[in-house]
Image 1 (tube, rainbow, N blue to C red):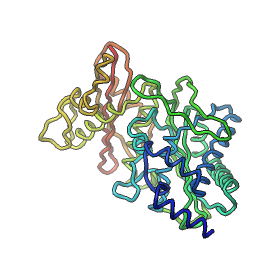
Image 2 (cartoon, rainbow, N blue to C red):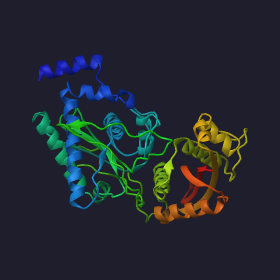
Image 3 (spheres, rainbow, N blue to C red):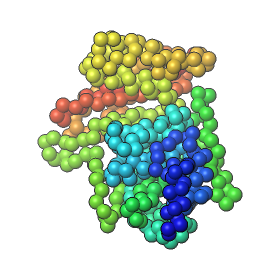
Image 4 (cartoon, rainbow, N blue to C red):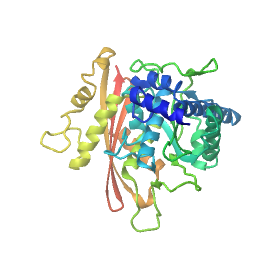
Length: 401
């Protein structure tokens, strides 16, 4: 055991990235470290075992097997580092906290992919439990994978995410707490079918184990309802802070995580369409939604003297967000902006009803434009006074002439 500790210290002084927040530029280094650092090797092997186990489960239920994505693995791994650093089991990270890498799953995916992701997230599972980490690398990894799988399977919300037919790729990561011996944090991030639009790159080759290469196989688009996002904990484990989206609706004031609700609504809007999600269009849309919410103004135009000003017109905002939008000009793309302002009652909140109302309002507001929509980006901001929610939504579309 002393030899192991000395080895870890030496690696930490040189190239170990085990306790750091990283993006795809460090992927090769991290995987290389997993070949020499026993802890990182166990964590990586547990992810591989779990990947095989969840696919056996999905196939047995008539669901398509999931393809592996190392970028999602990095995003999941980063979130495990955040949960460990803050001793908090949650899907939402707080800005300014140690290891922060994005508020929600989508933000963390963008960070890990360096804003070059090929899909949008469809669900996330998170947990912590305790395992025997002194059973040897392979046996420990198998125990972590099996225990975590059974823990998520036993929870209806987590099980729904694992069997979501609309999900096509995932990345699951495990992180062993070296200070709290035996404690393991885990995150599994699921995504819809990766896009093969000319505007994005194809997924990188997947990892291999025992000569088996995991690669992406194109599949048909599937439209499905937005899956639940859930958190699980081990009732026999040490206490960890846990936040619920909603508290008892019987009270006069209904507690609600507004940022999480906005993120859920955005994902629900994306799931209602098979059109490619554009990071630039999403950025432009989000800035304008923030401007309208800050100034309580329902308009396509922005004024410089107002709060949260980004750019005057929809076209200017898209050009700014895409650093010139040159790639769109090459393929004869023009843009359509639709905006919606919806009032909702937090005490009678229903995500499906809200997302449907938003889409209907956006479609009604949208001008008639010839051509096919090739990319879309949504921006969502929710403001709340007591139980009344004001939902500001912006949709930016790239339309091929």
